[in-house]
Length: 190
Image (cartoon, rainbow, N blue to C red; front, side, top):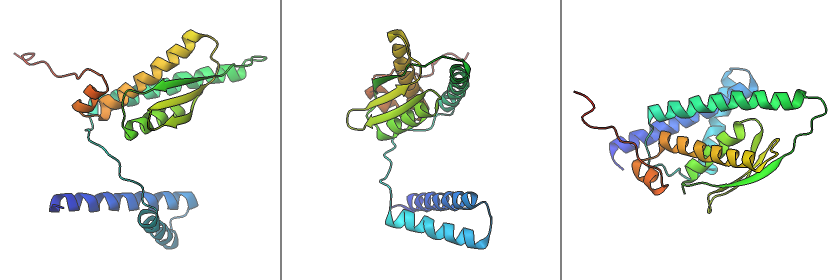
């Protein structure tokens, strides 16, 4: 391991430990030496005894893609929150749920996980199962009455996956997923 990679590895471990200690202290609601020490001990045990498998990330963070992803997500959460509140506050209305399956285009565990988490955070939808090997997400949706509405939700999940990939994936990963790579046009400046 090169010196640069070793330093980066140590920096990531330090960041992970600091995050775990901060979460521990926030859970207890008391910044004390004892809580910091116990949090540090737990962080060490968790990362040493119960390590997570490494995340296979070959992409790159694209700031403009990340802004589009977060902006669209904020709009979706706001819109869905309003729709769910209308359903909840309408007297005598019984919403009809539906379960849909969406096969994602990417075969990356990372993009599947991010897409599933973001889809579950939108009110009115919940990922009930994710098949890692097939790339299938099964979602329970609140108040779906027509096939057109189910198709719209299906398209929305695929759109979410595309925004995740455009924010984080490499050009090769985009091509493998069947998504066109947007390259800046040359000669646009004069």
